[in-house]
Length: 148
Image 1 (cartoon, rainbow, N blue to C red):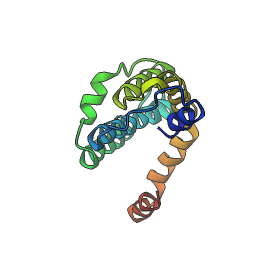
Image 2: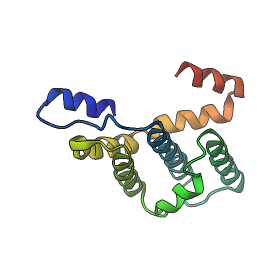
Image 3: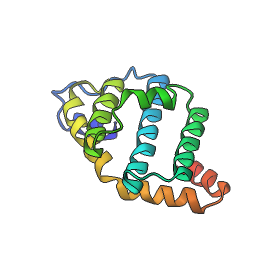
Image 4: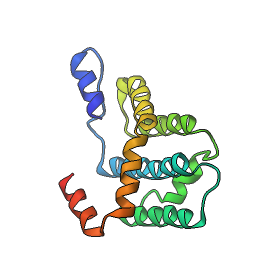
């Protein structure tokens, strides 16, 4: 959304993002992004041979995400996507879904490209967060969340 606002400010002839975005819309988009990021981490790190313990970890992450943001559920999000598709296609589909949910106005075309690119290129960040989840105590996670 920051990217869209900056683009809008640079070109005042364009209608920018919707200022009527509700907290519910925003929360649902964040939840979808979180769920897709969890799945992308799984695909990027494991490939086709997924150990049972890692599946359980991913499902636990999704269960916790449902406690943090109840709607939509992780299962509802999972059903929106063809998770057997290549990572590139999942990123593009997520980009379209999120941009439409956020009502990005005339900035939507640029946002689609930008968000799809971010999702595809943030593999290292997802890897770092996965490592953090495996190695740090829950108190460190709480501190990191509070720090933003």
